[in-house]
Image (cartoon, one colour):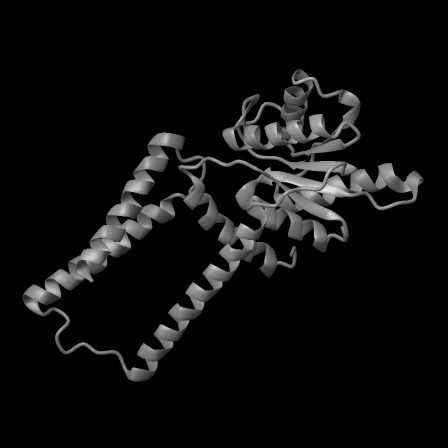
Length: 258
């Protein structure tokens, strides 16, 4: 057990260092890996002291508390695995052809430059638009800290340079999170579709780990024909993204967005 804790502590610590060196700390979430390292190392030290000096001698939890903790741990693991399984269902979806609209979800812009995550989303949207010339795209994202232009404008400039006609690109420049991305984008689409008398078919373009949540938010907002269009994500950061997305799904579920 002590050896296992040392291995897990080392893996968590090394992953945190790797993320910091490779991508920097654009958010505080990667610190969860540092906390995990401290946690597992702490258990390993405690087990070592117990084997050498018996520091835990005579310490025993009451059976009720011990059994309750075991059940709680099992439930947490079950919830985590269930949510991750749902996340994986969206990662490998093959979208339908000739959707009416894409909604490209925004991500960080560094000044005027697309972050890696956003670039991968926009590249995937560009591929789909080239293959389906009747499809239009709503580029969704406002202007946040460290951004000189809105995320929508950054995506618009990128796709225009790639040869996508500006007439096919609509900008939604007020959203600040995924829920608002979908809500405000669907309002734009509804206005465009009012005169056509039909419900538009929509593809949500985002990084693969984010597809399940994006589609679920769209369905909650009333979309009956919405599906995911997975873009690639950074392989080294994928584990971090998957764990972070677990908490994102729980949060949106808790506040009623899903």
